[in-house]
Length: 98
Image (cartoon, rainbow, N blue to C red; front, side):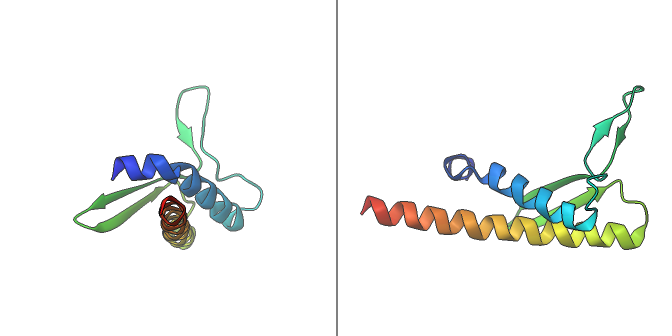
């Protein structure tokens, strides 16, 4: 699986989709992660893990539960969009090879 993701630039596609989705939640860009002078992280951090065929999502740094839910929903949709785009790109690549 890692080879396929690398071939498709999946992480680049997913990151672009996630950033666009998060920009819709906080259009001022204040969600973007940064470290302060003390080395503490601020903003929204995210991740996803594929285990047993299921994706699980994590989001930290939201201001409240409602915003947490917005970012979780945005992350879920963005990763699913990226998977769809990567799958389509892979199908097109294989079609060109035949």
